[in-house]
Amino acid sequence: MKTLQTRYPVVFVHGMFGWGDSEGINRKAPYWGGTTGSITEYLSERGVECYAASDGPISSAWDQACELYAQLTGTRVDYGEHHAGVYGHKRFGRTYSKPIFEDWSEEKKVHLIGHSFGGHVIRLLAHLLENGSPDEIALGKDDISPLFVGGQKNLICSISAICSPLNGTEAYKTVLKYHLLPWLRFFSFNSAIALGRTKLQGSLIDVHLEQMGVNTTEDVIDKKKYLDATRDLFKCKESIDYDMTDKGTEELNGLIRIVPSVYYFSYPFSLLGKN
Image 1 (cartoon, helix red, strand yellow):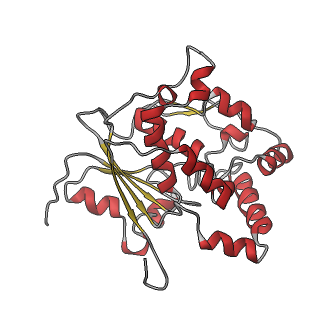
Image 2: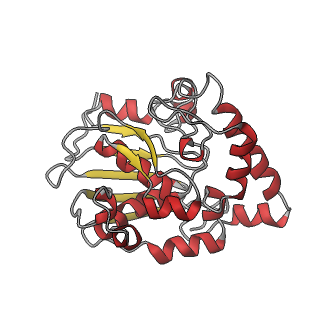
């Protein structure tokens, strides 16, 4: 068996409706690898330290970036007091008792690989680590998350976006053209709310929507009533479907700044065989 050499750990970040290594569905259908088998297992067997994170499959880029940061640091998910107030959801999510890997630092950076919407998530994480959030800083709170303070330099070695809608996507325009968006929202939101309230939550799948009161975790138990959670989720502007619109993508690209110390790669996809 050929051994591969990497200096830093690799963390894979899934796209819309995706999942990570920690979810039960991944044992039957690996997100990274699919019918060919698990890429993370394949690489691990060949000496590559790699992991597949699990974020909110229909959550916004901001919320997913906060969740990814908490997994990398082994801390409580903090969506930001200002951010939570603007979008009307809870500030805190679940607590991760240990990080994805130990000793994340300038000496042990990370390679981040994002598929589809995951490309937005990892770009936003890099931006927040470097630049923080002026809105959160302006509150002047002592308990602000380190993610929003900024100045965390040289923690990411490279960012690779695979088939990511970094400037929008024709697929979303097709959804709008054929008036499928209301049906897609209805199916995805109701599926998440329903599944998040069954025994499948946390065992087979993980909707990561406790900030919206959809599901409960060990340390977040104030779950909303079904209809209240449904109403709040549908009326909230902050979700993956908004970030996928031309306007949402424009806002993300207007916020995110390139971090000079990070190597950026993007691998597009075209059914026509043209990039």
